[in-house]
Each structure stands twice: as structure tokens, then as C-alpha cells.
Image 1 (tube, rainbow, N blue to C red):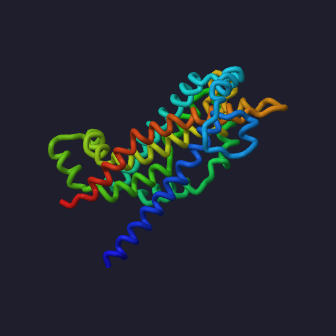
Image 2: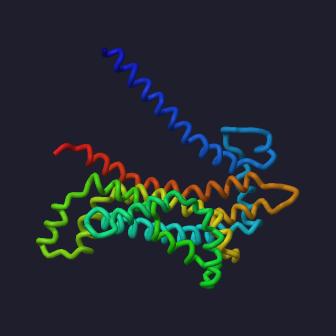
Image 3: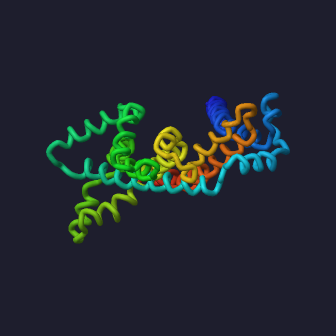
Length: 277
């Protein structure tokens, strides 16, 4: 029995190590290729860093790749969209869980239906609508629509169902707290793991979003990092693969920092949920 248990643990650890390797390997390849020249990359895969990092950086600067401006533009869009997405989705999810009102099931059914509609279907209509509102070449269409995120609402509603107790809200009401105060002081701290999870997904999705900003923004000074990376492919005779990988590496760095910062709330929530009262 003891040998069987050890073998089982060994298989589990081996499988987890394999998943870890498969997760880290693509990032390592990108980092290594950012230090190699285009010719070296075309010759084949290498796991050892090269010596062309400074040259790739020089190409980036000459191609109009303004790293700091791209960081700023991407950060403004991603942070704004993530905050609106998570806050208003949490507010909606709490309303669906805590209150009884006519049409509640219909509202939730509409939210589920919206999840099934691909974003690409509405792109043309959205572009025409923004054009009529004179909001093209602006960050507003990239930030404010995040308020209505059916996927985040659905996830937070399902999460809130596992942690919500009406006694918490009732106790706060007896103490004289208003509904918004109950939401901000009681429910938001209760939802931290779920909020952190959806904040990571929302930030990563918005940061990597390329097609919608490309459609709406024409001013180079307002380009996001993914949009700046595609400028490196404009040379007909030579594609600077090393510089492209360097640009991708720079765009990945904030995503890793956001994950490292928010993952502690997810782990903390899972740990707290595993403690028996």
C-alpha cells in the first residue's frame, strides 16, 4: 500500500513537472530568440541565449518602436478596462445573487446568451457606431465597453454562490449600513479570489488585444505594444525576427508581474476555503 502511494505521488509530481515545463518552455524560447539575430533564428531552435540583444534593441528604436509610449498606452487601456470590467461585473453578480426581482431569470438568460455571441460578429456595427459618435482614434471605445462583460458576470455569480450568506448582509443592515456600503465593505473582500482571477484574465485579454485597437486607432502615438510589434514586419526584404521577439518579450513582462501580484489573492482564497470551521 505504501509503495502504491509513493508511486502515485511520483506520477503526480512527474505530470506536474511536465505541465510546468510545457508552460515555461514557450516563454524561454521567446526570451532566447530576443537575443539572437534573424539569421540565427531561421537556422533553427536554440535554448542558449545569443549576443544580439543590443542590436535587436537598436533595430526596435530605428523602426519607431517607442517602448515607453507603447507601455503607457497599453497600461491605460488595460488597467481602465480591467477596473471597469471587474467592478461592474461584481456589482451585477451580487445583484443577481442577493436580490429577488421580476425578470431575474430572464436577465441571467440574456447574459448567458451574450456569452455565446462571438465578438467578431459585432465589429463592423461597433465601428460604425463609434464613427457616428466621433470616437474613432480614441481609447474610450476600448475601455468603457468593458463595463458589460457577460463572461465575468457569469463567473463571479457562480463564485459568489459558493461564498455568499444572506446573514452577512442582514447583519450589516441591522448595523445601519446601506446597500452600496454592504457591497464595498462586506462583499468585495469576500470575492477577492474571484476578482483576482477575472482581473488576470481581463488584463491579459485587453493587453494582448490587437484587432480592435487596429480598427479604431490610426494615430501612431496612440498605438499599443501589440500594434507597435507589427510595425517590424513592414520591411519587404527582411523581417527582423530577433527584434520582433524582443518586442514580444517586453510586452509579456507586465503580464507576468500582474499575475505574480494577483495570484497571492487566489492562493489565499483557496487556502482559506480549505480550512474547516
